[in-house]
Image (cartoon, helix red, strand yellow):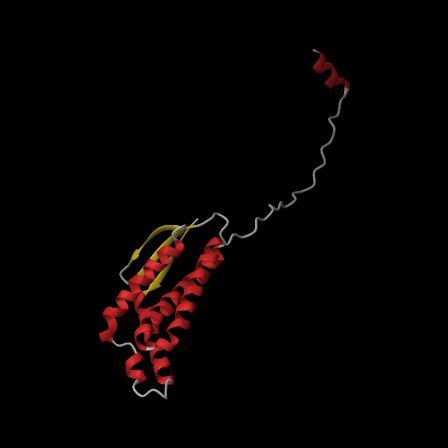
Length: 171
């Protein structure tokens, strides 16, 4: 069974900006933290590099299942070839978790330059999210026994043998 997971780049980078802004605004003891930590359009080139590194990390973690991957007009798509017993209910959750991985991984890499105190926590969280995507890809739903709906109960009747039937079969 093949599934496709999509991550929109603009949504990821917006979330990275929100996360970095929030983190910077909460550092009241550090004057200038907000300006230093918050991502801006001027930081786009560096964030693009982190975006690419995140794609490579996904490929590395999912290489056992990888059918195809690549950039699209609005983001990144990865196609995975999974077991026939994969529970396709998990696909939506895997896509959300992959989105969160991109956000946390890019934020961790950004914080390595701007907010070293929190960078490790974000890196660990990103790793755990990618492990979660992989675990879901490995998950197989339990086999189910086929169920049969009983039809009308028809009891076979023994053939009626009469003298005529016996005579016809002898001839």
